[in-house]
Image (cartoon, rainbow, N blue to C red; front, top):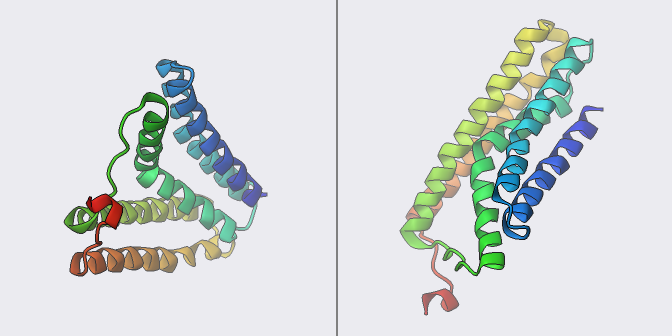
Length: 180
């Protein structure tokens, strides 16, 4: 059930973003676009409420509940950046604004380090959500599965950290077409 809720919320999240950007650029209704974009974080709240209610009604936590926490953490930490990325593409497509140049070299390494901070934030948010669920449910037998997500968060942060280190040591080269 929770897995279905996660999938529905993920689809709704992207529909809200696409609808908001479509309203902003295609329909030229920036206020409507902004209102639709505000729906994205509301969808995260809905998912958190669904997970909490499921556990408070006696459900036993599974990896799906942990995935919901991870989804919300990533959505909060990376959501603004994802929307900005899509917004730039919509502006280029429908308003003729030049696309941002792909990053390379030191600029790409700096972007990677900013992603490390975002990933760390996502891990902290996820840990706080899962820790909050564990405390609220107050039944270690039913929430034991959530503890298995914490090492996964550590792995995610370490992989992103290694990514940033690698691009700091060996900077990304500009593509031949971009170098001209």
